[in-house]
Image (cartoon, rainbow, N blue to C red; front, top):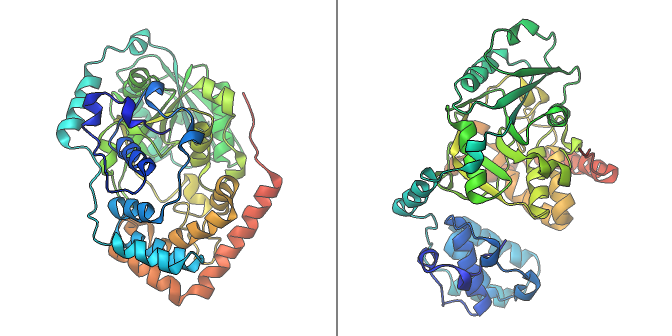
Length: 427
């Protein structure tokens, strides 16, 4: 969804700086639209470009390099330049554009604290009719061998200041401990499941949920007492169907700068997201091609976006993700989408390549592998460390034959998934 600068209010225009140094008028407008999205401008439909075909980008190499230099680090700038040369683009034109934009200063995009506080104050003062109506919310939790952490999850839910919700727990633990679920001051519906299958578990809970709003949660997370209320209020305030809560992790990094304010979300996290049930009716449930692997939530988020739904990143609905090393997907052999626990296991996880190839094609997926695989050689807990990520890139060159084999295996297994097609059921 592209913001049309000309249709923004005077107050919103102040957040955007028109850059007239671009060659084409179109680049000036697209740059403004990008600024607006990152700075948290959430336009209504009248403030967006309604016919993207009329705004189709016109290739201008100088404009491309200017944009890249303004908003991305030097390593990305150099990396794209090298890729363009290796992709047989005109070397004289590429080198000229690269050098002419080399000294363009990088622009910070995040809104200042005053702007953030003003937006959050407006939200805090909002009298939500939806919140007052108290619709039934269905909190969905798949769990596997995590009773030690699930007890804290349920304790947090007991403290919620929003009263009208049910809790559906699909327990895949063997043996299942029925007595664990006794004595809670919660409306708990237990769904035992013998198969160790995360996406099947979530789909089953959604199918059995009675609420108009589905709140997806993890079994190793902690939330504040207003967590449910913050999700509902954000849906009402922004008139959207998906509230993507923010996640702070104890391992592998923390909150980003963007997590401090409302904006269109580029992340859909099934550990902390509220979705109106009509979305599942219209786009289907989770694709079981991601079973025992990764990025099923990312695929669902992308599918909802392509079907016209807007995802709002919600700073008020925060969770702490413990990222415990046992139970859940950790038993399936990976720390994240790119880091299997074994060096020779498929890298990235095959479902991740299935997602990339399905939506973006093989060529883009190859370039994406060049970006994502080398840093993945660094352990998960250090993945935000820029110096160690650079070390991972250097190591990948030294161990290229050893790294190529897991990537080739992942590519072959993703091809099988593509041949089989999506495994999506519908409400």
